[in-house]
Length: 332
Length: 132
Image (tube, rainbow over all chains, first blue to last red; front, side, top):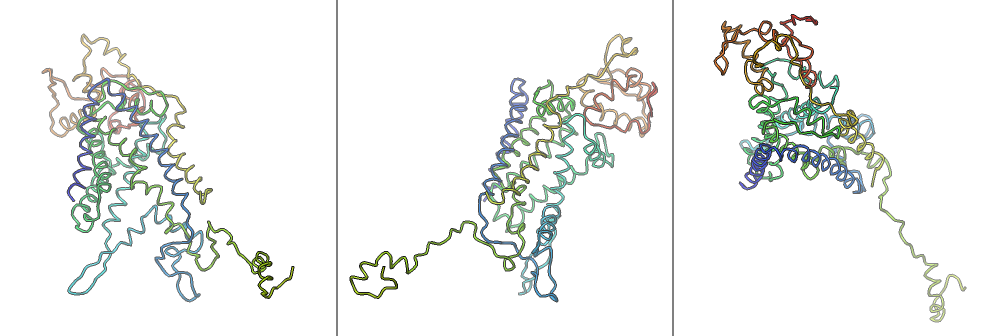
């Protein structure tokens, strides 16, 4: 069990060590920045597409929505329109709540045996941490656009201002930085400390958590402790996305650590559980309307069956049947 | 591929979001700005040196200025001794901006480039013109 935790942790430490060395040697810096970014971007982009197309090739012969509420029935029975949708509008609402608010996690229950009774009670921790983590990640990713594009779009500047609105310290501490640090730590503690969750957790579950934690910590260290020249970083990032890559001199090694961890994450993305980003849209238990009994659903790979009628049978064996004196429908 | 139309729309949205920075820049790189040191006060200096070394000032001036603010306004100590032992009067307007009197060509250049909007100017003003 310990190997499942220590192996991904070790891999993250190796990435950090390699990037620390590579980022300190000036002739290796292009490899650890520009080349790494292009490779990671390409693997992410094409890998993501290929994975989605691969999934789309799987037939869904029958509707399998999770029926998390009363299906449409007689008029006096209350129908749960979002949790058991039978219309496209209902499915869209269900998908919206699933993707934007993580409704499935919100419905999470814990089950305990208390003095012989099996008690189910709501537990919102997973939902709370997941929501905090995902939205912080989104905001942080969007905020990083300021380093890639010029001129900087207004919404990025607004996001930056709102995120740093408490103006604590200089450079200001972002709220999302605090939230993501707490949320990822919480999610990691959940995996490590709950025996049932630890039992089902694999190296592939810990690796993204350690990577993201490493990214957050290296980012915070770069912002607050080991400062780097941000205009040089922008020149690098901007150069990469405008296909005129440059590697300005004098960027600290901490930047290359941060970048190596980010590139590992996005290159690993299409091969990992992180593909739930695309997969959530393709989940047949969520994105199909419950019309199992209302509409006729034809099996998509059904071929018309080959019948062999009695007439054809008789045509085949007419001569032999005649010879044996068997009765025939037609003589010729 | 099943539901090819819907999957293609989804992939197109994904591609647009991912390729946004590439398309937005349309192949034109914006090089790193060079803040101008071309002011009469800097030209008149016998030795072109800021309060600390250039590397430190480029990367850490914001934390440094914040430290200055705390020292001057909260501790009431307006003298700073730099690494070389030189005594410097702590004041944004009378020390920093005396040499760097060109806010537009100095401060704003990198701040605009990196999308940083420092709140120095919420209280201070640029004595050499420009708005508050």
